[in-house]
Every structure is written in C-alpha cells, then in structure tokens.
Image (cartoon, rainbow, N blue to C red; front, side, top):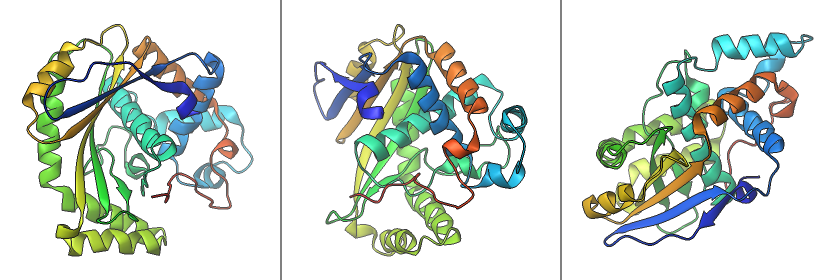
Length: 270
C-alpha cells in the first residue's frame, strides 16, 4: 500500500550535503481504502500479537474501540501526531525501502502519553558490510513551522550521541520476544561500534498546504554531514490523522494481530 500511496515528486536539490526527497499522494488508492489500511497499521504499532484476543475473547468492536481509546491511543493531539509520524516512518522503511525495523516501539508505552526511550525509529541493513544503521529524526507538523528544520537537526545530534542506548533497548526487546538472530546482530553492533555505518536521516510528515521549500534551503545550509531528508506531504493532516485513528479504533484485532502470535511487523530483508 505504501509504495502506491506515497510517490516521489520532482524537487530541486539544495546545495551542500542534504539529499532531499518529497513524497505525496498521487491518488492511486481510494481515500476510504487508504484510511482503513492506515488504521490497521496504527493499531498494530500499539498492540503486540494476540493482545486483543487475550483481553476480548468474545466481545465485539465497541468494546475493542473503548479499550484502545482508553489504554492505547493518546488523547492529546500533539502526542497523537508525533506517534503517527513515527508509524509512517517505520512503515516507509520496512515496506518501501526494505530496511529491517526490529521493534515497533509504541507497543512499549506504559501509558498513552508516555514517551519511549531512545530514537524515534532505528532501521538496519545487517547483511551490508559494514552493517548500516539509519537513524531518522521524525517531525510531524499540521501547521507552518519555520523552526522544524533546526529542531530536527538538534534532536538528531542528541540521539546520535546516545545511539548505543537505543540499540541496547532494541536488543533487549528482541531477546524478550525470543528473536535470537536479531538480538545477536544488535549485540554485535554494540561490541564493535567501529564496524557499523551510521546514516543520518530526517523525516517530516507535514500538512501539504503548510509546507514550504524554504525549510529545505535553510536545512541544507546547516548540515555539515551527509543527511537524507524525506518530506511526506498529506492534505489536511490534522483531519486525516483523526480519521485514521478513528479507523484504528473500529478495526478488529483479527485484521492485524492473531492469537497465534504471528507478527509481521518487522522485516529482515537487508
């Protein structure tokens, strides 16, 4: 779905070390189908496999929706938008760019408003030599914000300085879930930090009408190391996110998770 929904647009590259890609909806997928599909993606980011089946054995959609609304989905719009940006980023790296995203971090929130430690998303290419780590700093904006580039740059510098902490968190979660292969690969990156290639990424999920290319120009003048910037433009982002979360509340657990424990949320592809 994501490769059909978000299509590359023609852009002018800024001077310097910033590589810029703009993604937008080309209208290939019908609106209702898109919202429903993204709703399932949202729900599976918050729920471990089989969680709904364990809580609601024989109950229906209203009970599921109430549970999700109270216990999983943030009510605060700012937090919800931030989570949505993280969900889109993880799906883009997994489903389109074919990186391995070992953990869907939103599942590890203790409360809907809680922030999970470490970077927004970490993606890996373990089979590359040396193994590559993409560190995307994610920003979601439903309004014009001239500071978003500077904020992303500063935030990325901070998370890169604490990268080992984020890798260790992922390693521990993979170990807990019995994903021994991934846990060992992540451990190797901690043991041999000199044998890893760290890539600097930024991803902005932005309201289409509010987006201005001046942000790219300013960011291009600021970065001093090769950095990839991806901007995802969405029409009426505030309203769109609300519709997607509504769809997530009404989606049944069997659409995304099953009591068998099967989890297709990660992709060990590269």
